[in-house]
Length: 113
Length: 112
Image (cartoon, rainbow over all chains, first blue to last red; front, side, top):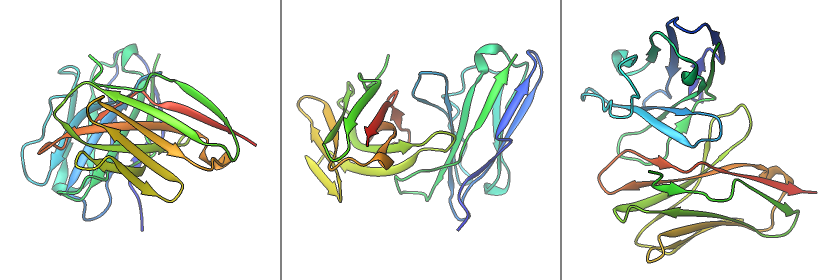
């Protein structure tokens, strides 16, 4: 079946512009995660959605970052007024509630010039 | 503060030999550990996991060992194959939480 998909695969933007990154999780997965991987770093947790519960936003690095998940499915990560340090690969993952295996999308490589 | 550490950024191994990837953690509340493999331009894929009630879990060529007293786990791949060349991440979580802390990864290169 279809895996987790993310779009765009690459995004180059100018400093100060806003960007939106999209994630389509696996159908039936109620849990959705966003991570960021900066060059030479591990995966950094950003935000977690589980069903209709309030999301855990504790990993968002600043108030320029926000995310929403519509209808318990597709999620959008928005970065406002992008900075060069936002350049990274942004990964989305989904899982069945109560299980531990996360299925990752291919990521969006964001470059802020 | 890096709670999950993979101190070797890279490792080269000859095909057919054993690959040993190491991971250390600092949080004694962690009780579930996973290894993911990542190829370039792809997302990480789940490889193998271990719960703190075990000290070993085996799946084909892959075995994960957990030493709770040392807060150390390792992934053994034997025999190593060129297709195993990838970046390997270990991740840990505490009971009742859904948040995984990932290490920085180790790039494994298996030489033919």
